[in-house]
Length: 128
Image (cartoon, rainbow, N blue to C red; front, side, top):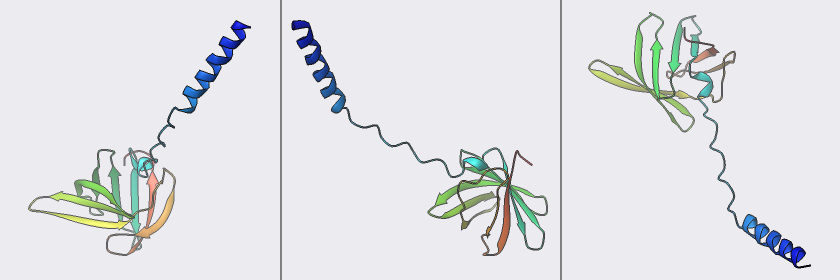
């Protein structure tokens, strides 16, 4: 009987300790840019001109313009906007456009570019 009583007391104490353990914090939200890292976002304008963007988790970006010129800069999400600040000699400029989150290689969609013109965007696997 003593043994059964001791076991019951131990179970009650363990249950009380478990019940008082605070819940785990919620998991952080998924990175909405994750599918772009290590890949290339290709933006095709209505006239067929193509711009390529290569985003990195360290918030850097490399853009290749339609004329082949490559520029480097930094990106940041500001609300529902993706903003890119280019590092250029003698000046820097920040351009923002609507952001479409959680895209991955193979996804294609339409959106506005920083000038407000509609473009077709595609995530291409790998760096091109």
